[in-house]
Length: 239
View 1 (cartoon, rainbow, N blue to C red):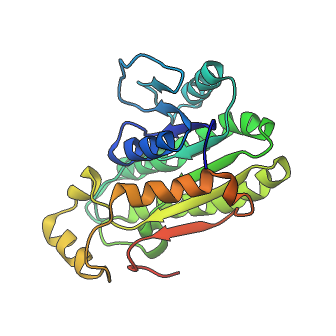
View 2 (view 1 turned 90 degrees about the horizontal axis):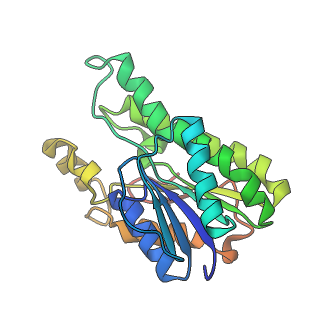
């Protein structure tokens, strides 16, 4: 499905990003892993890690994308996973958290997409996959800042899909439900217990279940899918 394709994965050293990169690589893709965390892993013909990158800074985002293209000679897909989370009610929060959530979740995707789009257009069949959230669709107590940012990702996806279509670039989103990652583990236990009780399948999702959706949207088989949001949430929210 992905043999020989070059994927840039942002947030690639995090729990979900690592699994997305692993599954894509197992299907024949070559991976440029971009993350804010430092990396000392030597580059190979199949993978390069570009660490210490603040994707909310447009210059750093562009430099990272260009480094990936220079290493592999092309770019076929961008997977925007980089993001962040904060549990904070509007009454108890401050505007700094609001700005931080938008910088981490929206500005990172914008900057990476802006830098990648010319290279994706050159491939004639480029792919962008953005990671949204069930909370950007349905909302969640204590997550107004995060829900607003992820809702922005879904609107960003629909609009960018219309711009990318004439270049052969598809743009889609995945809205995960609650996945068994460190980010979800940070949710207060009493809140998480109530959330799981509302998931029809009765459990948290697993990172590989999201990663398989990403792999499909990055593949040739998804060439007629664009502007869509794939909800993977165990039936918790049906839009």
